[in-house]
Length: 277
Ligand code: PEP
Ligand code: MG
Image 1 (cartoon, helix red, strand yellow):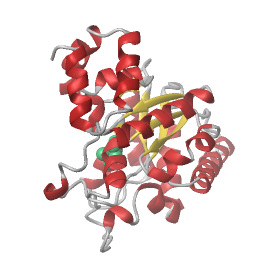
Image 2: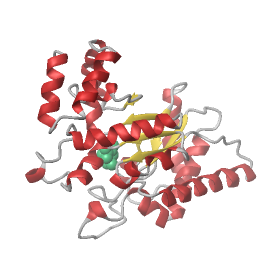
Image 3: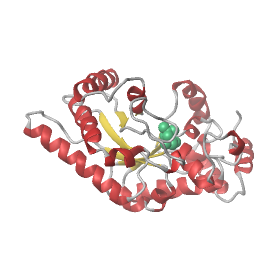
Image 4: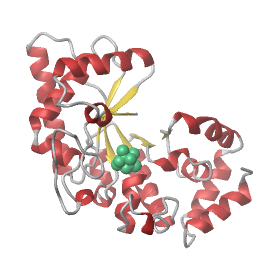
């Protein structure tokens, strides 16, 4: 998973289409033939661009991710055009939309993507249509996951944001950090619902919040049927070590139990009964 906003944050102005092609092409090339999930610009909240000030009293409940880019289709179109051009001849690109809250937003994002593809073809570029996914990180999107799943190729659950919105606890506020436990059944039940919705529609479901790299969470996520774990490279060895200890039947039983427990500590205790860490 490539979070494109970081490349935007270290600059002094919005990168042009050409500059973005030059940014994305080497990333896709380096990983070919393996896929790269590129997430469209996810600014707002705690991530601001030095050249585009957004002043809001509740930034995490404000102009973030797709909300911002759908209000600035020029920025979105430039970015997806650059991604599509960078992907020519490789076909390893997957595009991921952040902070999708409603079906209407997804419809609009897909419409803009189709327009970018059409315009590029008319200009003579041999672009292909990449698999498209949405981040599930807002409780409204969890509730509508069945309808969202019918419109995309995959999901990626963003537990960092989903947890803060579930517990109404700002992810940057240390005072409420204990409350925002991503391994709490209140979050796990939503993950369960989202994975089921994806699988019912024959789509795959990944998870790209910090939870995916936590060894104690892996048995539960595997048991809920998660198809893909996206984590910082430093977490990969411990994650592999954990997965190598597990079987699917054991993970499934643990996950079903976790959904019935009262809090995250009880889930961690149940995990410790099954695996050694
Ligand atoms: C998330 O919210 O879990 C996520 C993966 O996105 P970010 O942390 O970049 O908001
Ligand atoms: Mg997020």
